[in-house]
Length: 294
Image: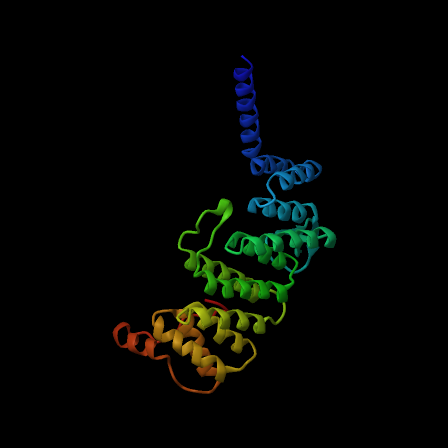
């Protein structure tokens, strides 16, 4: 009888331990996150860290907790249209006077820095987690710290040469088409540099050169490299990467338009060869509109 009781007690204890180990902290955190219950999040994160200190989702949760806790959004009003979403307004008594309502996001430094501490720990422990790397990059872009923003992109590209793009995402799920996804996401970040106020040609060039170090046939980054020189009116150095991009993608009108613009600025009366070849068949020699990115 005593042996039977002992066996039952052991089984109950085992089930309790299994249930504790399988506690879905991430799901509970998401509920608290939606409620913006930061006190509840902090309490749960403390318990989560004690129970599962090597859970990669813990570091993502800590990052999201501090980023959103420190996030501040302000209403702005300006005569010029701000970046992002905005509402165009006119005065009732003066319809010709136009102004724009928008919003500006900032972060309290203490919470932002703590978020970076946790995501850095996560990246160090789980270097294949691309979501962590891009989460940090996105956050740095939000505060327009474009030097560190660029540094993080470079680190990701460098590591892609180590892990051969064996990237993981949330819940350690493999990223589908990892190389394509990584490069496409980085191109979106480069677009942010193109659109930002200021001269970030050097940062764009750094990213493009790093991409080309590992992926030399990336048309987008050959184009980015060329445009980074065009921004600085260095059309002699802009042409070689653009001409290489033309060979790889002879129908890319963005590349062709940028080549034509370089020829024009250098005073060369020449049309990109790809356009010339097609013009004999199509009857047109008009290049595409020059754009700042591919």
